[in-house]
Image (tube, rainbow, N blue to C red; front, side, top):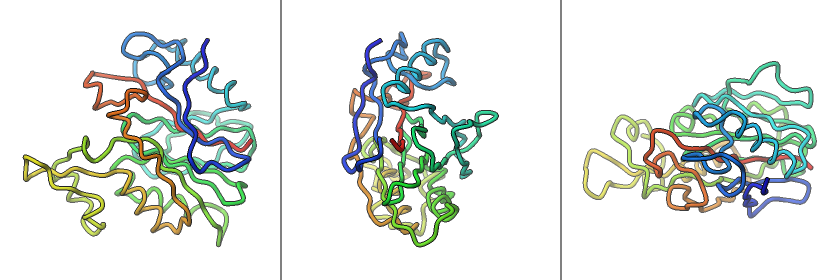
Length: 246
């Protein structure tokens, strides 16, 4: 099987593998073609398993930690013994080597975070609900190290130009720096365009993260990535953003 497409984070340091998968490669078929890594979207389970194995071999991991992402704010620890079951969580951390932390998205924001000395790594899934619930701030506060310097990469996500939301959503971001997070909708006064990457940046700054790099990639408009809104289908695949200590 061909390798799964991959882009590396611009600020990935020596000793870490940090980046996101692309649609290219893999063996999914139909609307999931070709590198879907999500087991919950209706794809053939054997194809998903094969794609995950290809990714694992490709990055040199002993294991990949997947999550049952629920748009919450729960943080779990991953070790080389594995979890007894797929944990329901949206953030995961480890200090183990060759253990990849995988965050699945197809419009939400993947945030990959590491201690500057690369001794601890973190993966966070942040949709608007998670951002509003302060998953980023709570995750950083819960990590078992104090006075640490943190570095983050904000992976590919839907851009503000393509993410319009109603008042039920944008009103929940009152108190945030509105000029960065929300933009007026060009034709509907009841809607706003929400900038998820900017919201993640603000949350990381609030959490005390020292260095933040954004991919600058809109997965909606970039055909190399899956996008739930972009495909306008009942379902589509998911790409993974992965961080691993080598």
